[in-house]
Length: 383
Image: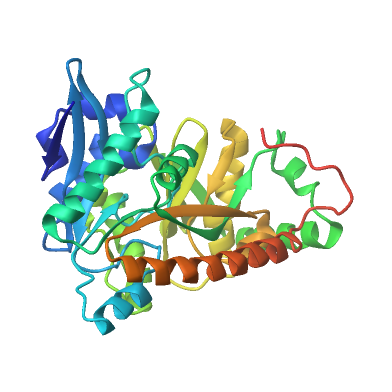
């Protein structure tokens, strides 16, 4: 087995990488290359690619998206307090390594392995290569974010510190249509959801669903500007630029689409989605003004409607938002893993994670009690 390091994902043929990535959109070669080639994930933005690859006699056996980071922005697993603690102890926390998808808080595989090639052993080899990189470069740490079950188990067995957080996700329980979904709500919650949808219609707003390859240059410009305005209104610069939207719309046309809220023939709001074979991912939103209930309709109800119509099993709408609970989203734990080189700092973080984990579990349990579904009814398993 030979270990290699890529400073750009384009250094490897797309077919080789995608044979491991499968249909998970955020680790497709096209997505990562779009991030890097448009400058969104680059040395200048503080995301220097250091992708790991393992090769054997048959070719590419395993890979992991790896970045050297000079800050902690765009990760959605917050370790700023850890950085301050390290600095107060006289240690440099940055640069660090991050095994993740830039600006993408979506659970999925992080250690890509060729099927039938001994996946557990390949994951161990990838983790060992990450730790070796930390030692060789005298870095503070390496962090694997939004891990799937296999990745989480591999990190735990390798001695990494596990961290959990609570996001909100929707699960398809075989609903026939949106009304069937709402019928699972208690009466008052169902009434509220229908009133929200009605208020959007009463403002003269209707929706168009367009795949990436159906977007004109004019529409791509409009999608980007709506997205940008949302960031700017909150005092932030958007992570993604127009070139990324233009590139990804064509490169991932089958798994990238937008929901355009149209009023008077003009797009007044947009929600950007990606999808895999069984899961919908809500990523970005923007509007040109405040419209009653439009955020809930565009980002949540339209996505749920799409999942039901297309037979998708789950919908991950992104981070934050207890307001998602009333719209049918349920608490779900997300996982990250952390290898801290300095032993005293590692022990301190481990103690913190124990306390934090207990608080997260309590929060998730309390959030679940506020779900809108009828109490006492047997809940069918997800589809």
